[in-house]
Length: 186
Image (tube, rainbow, N blue to C red; front, side):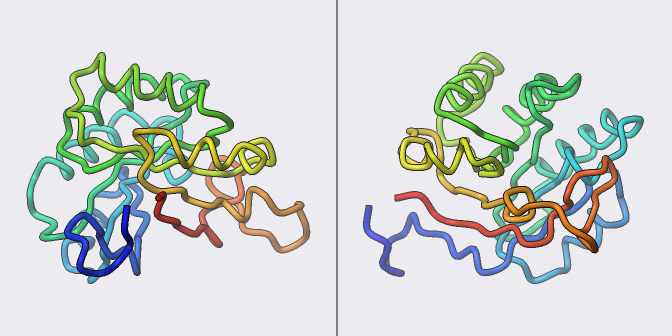
């Protein structure tokens, strides 16, 4: 695939904004923020007791058509959580352009996500943004990037860095989203 700016399939992702899907006011505000893409976050930014309502908010927002030309994605909880499978099922037919998958370690993880998306009726063009947050993923990054459904790698640099004083902590005690980077897969 060519990466020239004349390629009609290339989308600029100069700014990608994480929006906590549990916060309806933030989702409304996102309609006016000049970002190239939005990630409706169901994972770190959402407390456990708000996961289900956040999922409903993200699906409604993704399908609303009210975000202009922005690329809309939904960041699911991992499949190893009580919410991950339901997040994927909901995202599959939400109208989002992609689903953001945390802590991808291998292509086996991606195959399972793709299988679940397909079983839930996802269109073929729904892509995966794979979050690279572990050393294991770094070691397998070429095969992860080459997966047929992966469109973007999201680098979780805070998750990869050793813990230290003054590090940002998310609501669940995680590292939060500071320092994340995006890379387009070839």
